Each structure stands twice: as C-alpha cells, then as structure tokens.
Length: 373
Image (cartoon, rainbow, N blue to C red; front, side, top):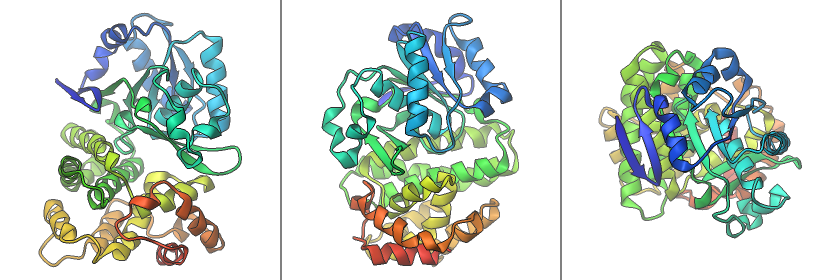
C-alpha cells in the first residue's frame, strides 16, 4: 500500500477502498453525499462502496450524473445534499462524477449563481477554503480529477466552462485499481487516451515546471506500455494499476496547463460527446500544429513512448487510436462540419487556449478541426 501526499492525500493500491471508513473518520465526515451514476449502481460498484462505509446508511446517494456534468445536475445533487444534511461529498466514478461532486461541494458553502465561479468569469478569486470536503474515488483511469483542482461543467446557457481553484482539490483520493477491473475495452481505450492527452499537453505546455514535466513523461511511458494490455484484458491487474497511476500523474502534471486539444474538446463536449474520445481524435492534428514550437520535446516524448527513431508522433497517436478501437475522426463520432466555426470561436475563450505552446487563431482552430474530420 502506498500513501502519497502530493497535492493531496492519496491512498493508492488494489484494495485501497477498504481504508475508506478510517479515512472518513480522520476527515470528520459523518454523512457524505455519494455523487455517482446509474451505471455504477447497476454494476454493483456502489454496493461495494457502501460496504466500505463505517455503517450501512452512512451516506446519501445521488446517481444522476450525466456523461458531461451539467449545471442542472449540480442543482439536483445539491438538493439531495441539503435534504440529507450532508457534511461532505464522495465523488465516485469517472471524471464526470468527481467534477459534479466538486461543484456540489462548492455550492454547498458558496452563494449562487454557479456561473460566477467559472474561471472565464473571473471566479478563481471567489472560491474560498469554505468548500465542503471532497473525497474522490475514481472507477476509470483517465481524467485524474481525483487530484485535480478543476471541474468542467456544462452550464444552462450551453457553455462548457471550468471551475478552477486549489480549494477544489479533493481532501482525499482513494485510488483502487481493482475498481477498474473488467472495464469495457472501448471505455478503457477512451479514458486511457484522455490520460495520455493530459500527459502530452502538460509536458508541452510552455510554463516552467520541470517536476510536472517529469511526472507527465512517467505517466506517458506507463500508458505506452500498459494501455493496450488493459484494453485487451480487463482482468490484467498490473496494467490496471499502471493505467490508474498514469491517469493520476496526468492530472498532477496538468497543474502546469494544457493546450489546444482541450480548448477544442471542451466546447465539442457540449454536443454530448465523450471527452477522452474527443481528445484522442484531436491529438494528431494539434501535434502537427505545434510541431517546431516545442524545442526538442517531441524527441524526448517519442523516446519515452518507445517510438522507433524517426517515427512521427502524430501518426503514432493515430495508429494507437486505431489499435485500441477508437474512431478515426470527428465525422465518425457523428460531428457535422457545420459546427466548426462555432467550436473554433469557443476554443479561443477556453482556459486551455492560453497554455498551448504555439499561439492559435480562430483560423488555426478551424484548420485543426477540418483536419480531424
């Protein structure tokens, strides 16, 4: 068992869920709200969570998390939180459940509206340490939201914006790779490419943060070695351990910033599309756009990924996407090219736009989108 204290307190290993009761007691949480989704209820994983709680009925449950968390779902979950007199949140699931849980914890202690806390609305300074305690327990290996300081929410006005604050970092992350055993191949692939996009974009971000870059490279290397194993065999415990570690490392690293992949995938996510799959499809075009603007970082990254000398990084990503069964293009995901101008304009306003290594214009974003169709 590894106890890691980096950004937050992290219990990491197969079987870590068994530590939940003691960790909740240490935090003083007596009646948390479990924010999850109906798929995890049906799978039996929420029942496993209940079995790890200090007592049956020690937590209330909100299981209505949508694939892309919405402002409407935040209010629904907050109503459940208040009705059950909860004192904290357990985000249990993928990034959507953890992000939704963070937003609930924020509004449990901060006055509405939610929009005023979005980074794009100058909300960083409005989020205080009064945020209710959040415990994050991932059941996929992708977003790394369990150690992230952000939460991305689709607002009622249609925008997909981010809450960003160090006060939103969960007080505790329980990373139990056994919760991902048996994850379907397509979801394993999509979440794995999400983690890889985090590692790559964080490494390439122009901000100066060598420790974050080292973490990003380690995460990328783990994904290169273990993603296809995890996709091929849902019961591969070693591969699942390494993929969960890599996903966590991706989020540790992207404290440094992300880039054009996420600037585009965030507004595309308002169409109801899976975030990790979008990142996978967009990554080759963005890598081509950034080529020549990152010094020797492509060479370093290619070496850590195990590419043969001279191999092109964007083409390697596209080939990896195909090998793990992800769609080859936005068109194959059902996106219509009529949305290109709107998405390109929205990308310019996304918080990840500013940390892309090569400054991008609306026309640049349009070309990247066209190349991804």
